[in-house]
Image (cartoon, rainbow over all chains, first blue to last red; front, side):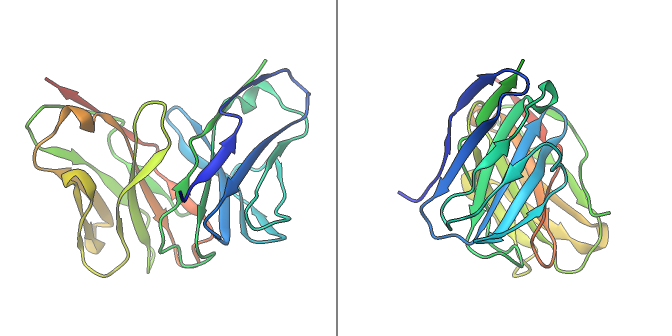
Length: 115
Length: 113
């Protein structure tokens, strides 16, 4: 089954403890992206990747890192999480990096709480 | 700056009545426009997309949207609401180049029995 898989689904952590949220897609998509969803703000783009080893900042990249060493994986790294990063996170992918004609395929989300 | 505005944060309709969810985007040539739906505790599912082939776009579950360039709008409609339509709806725009995807703030649809 074609899908985007995020892990974990729920995560509670403490301020400053490094964490990684994994994202994997099995559709051979070139474009992958991370979003955070907060009430009243919709989804905001954190980082995106157009292909292996090609990443760029979205609208809210502060406090996050990403890497794209393989086409299928696009982990989101919080080196020193803070409470304002408590949010619902979504990973998404689509076949081609440009033009934006294809819709995004979303994972089921990761709900992160930082205390 | 490029932006997407969903004009209503909440919409409440009775079952069987029409649904209208409004979306305006900042003007640019060659936008790709999408509507996604998010049911509680679920990921986002594509409802429909506009990519310049036709201005009236039909989607899943009886939804459709009309692209109006002169009004920079892409409103979502459905003739008759069903209880299962209760969810949050997002209008999404990708501009030429397509590297950034811009989401509206969302409209929560309530359907009363």
